[in-house]
Image (cartoon, rainbow, N blue to C red; front, side, top):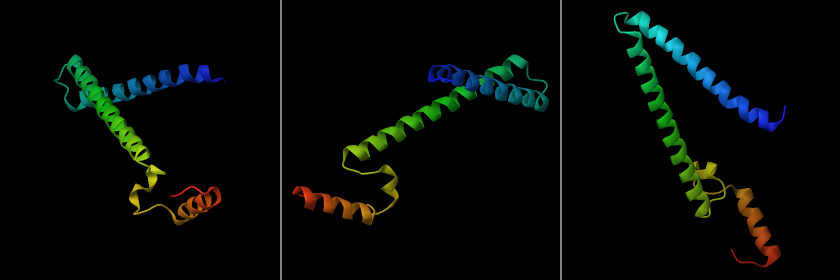
Length: 105
């Protein structure tokens, strides 16, 4: 399967999964509170789904901005933020490269 077909099929699969999960949640909600009209349940499921999607998008954008800021400020890898410095092997490789090329650190 080529990439163009994958690009078309993936959003369709995600949408189908979201609709299926929403339907299951709507049915579960209807059994928990049968006095609430179906339109109200569907509206709340849609509102909560949109709110969750917005939270995920905001989190993704914030994460990407943080990673870009780290890389712009000279960070080698954003995964190393949890450590106090870069790995020793990388520091050694950088020093060896600077010694070979004659560039200062």
